[in-house]
Length: 407
Ligand SMILES: [Fe+2]
Image (cartoon, rainbow, N blue to C red; front, side):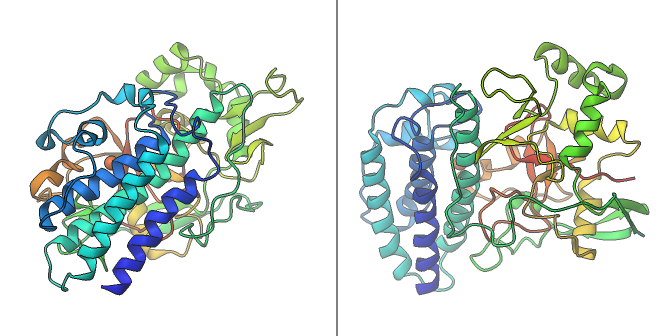
């Protein structure tokens, strides 16, 4: 179990490394109900190991503070009542130093447990889930900080991502000067998803990726790269945000109600916060000139769908995307931007959630959301795969979400 312990410790350390450029104030504030403070992410991921692993499998484990279960339970009805999500930013206590001490307490107990496990121990799938859960929160920590910093008129920069655990093949910007090319796929009965058994430390998949099954896919074409900012700027300049013909009805309502005129973090010429004659974009590095060749990100599903309509194309289904990911060698399927698909987030045929409290992990969210495929530059190393199903409501804009066209 030495390898598992090393992985546990490295991965847990990466959460702290991600938080390290942030002040204690940065880590406490919540910029909107959908986002969580960094401090909450650090506490909640720790609570997950304490509750799901240690309290079930470590005899004699003593919780660090029983009151924290109420603060750090996210959405598990089976695990009792919880602090309201929109009020996570009110938690000035426990102090950040106490959250760090909580993490150390749980990490010490986890190290003892892992050291004594054998290869078939029933705790292993839950430890694997806890590690993948922490990786999901590592990306959320970054997207939430980005939203927080964009809400500050000073527009502070987060800076460079820490090296350890960062996805190795994810340059921040893709040089993509080529005109868009279409790759043709024959389709047919294609494999989708993962085996039920893929819940271990070596070959992990979330339950929403199971079971593996066949899908009938008609012949299709997929763009050889993501839609870039230059192309999206042409869509903006063509008056797309004032043209209801391009939009799904719910999307058009949001364009009007929230005065959407560009992707979430684009800054229009003349914006008084950071004067410039040209479009700029806010990111982890702060305000930068808009890179026309970089993948466009921070789009809602509605914007992605409207762009596809404008471009005379469509969004791929998640099954087209997965088939193409396995059958091609496209460099930017993973590691650049999540890609909205036209697929609603539904259970696969024969889907069975995991048992116990973690049956609530994915299954109960399978309504009213769209699937995103791929991964982003903020996704930790080792957390990307062709079968991964991310999901968000269609209005969501604060994730690293872009698009790839299909036809
Ligand atoms: Fe969580």
